Image (cartoon, rainbow, N blue to C red; front, side, top):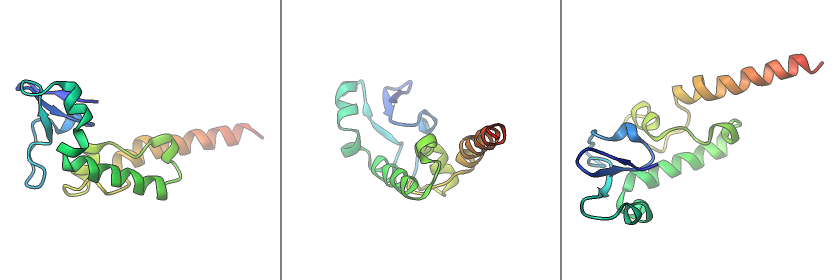
Length: 116
């Protein structure tokens, strides 16, 4: 899900990161649509944007450790970044716990209690 900011900067995967900067990742943009086409920026996103690789490492870690991964899909990039001190390769976030895992557990309990 690319987000195009007011100045043409493109942030991939997480519109919440638009406008933020970081010492390791800069402004989180993949490039600028005023210089390169959106199709090029999307196709080259992982090569141009180091935080995306770190994010996918976190998704892989979630897949390996979380029983709710099939429902959740590995959390959102901005939640990981802000809840894991500027890292994208962490796993569970508060958002994931409260909005995804708790929901799945509640539905599962409800179904089991009515299946008897």
